[in-house]
Length: 128
Image (tube, rainbow, N blue to C red; front, side):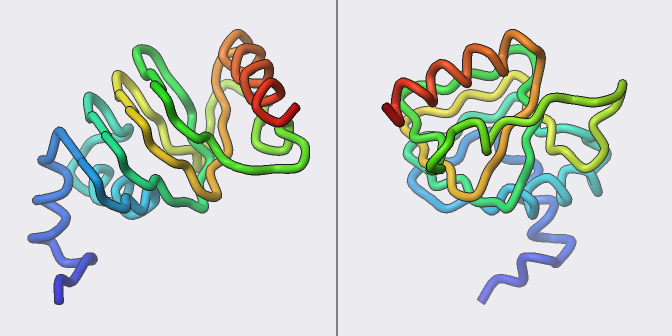
């Protein structure tokens, strides 16, 4: 059995650029990247993955979602949070990442006002 908290596992997962057909516990990935000196999840591609929280993700420049299921809520606005200050303490930053046909579970989103507006419209369309 793999010890997901070991330094060896942390180095291995932090070095990966692609994830395919697997469950990804986002808080664990973010912590291993932080331990490796990377403050955000950057330049990674996830294909046909289940992206698991609990997590609040800050969607930064260059991140795309293609054919993904973003989560479930009776009111999609429950998954969107507007920043209240200059820093997003505790949020997992996603920069230049690509998500293809992924399913997000227990993940909420924050980002620029335009991102929140676009995501809100997209989620509302799926819920309606």
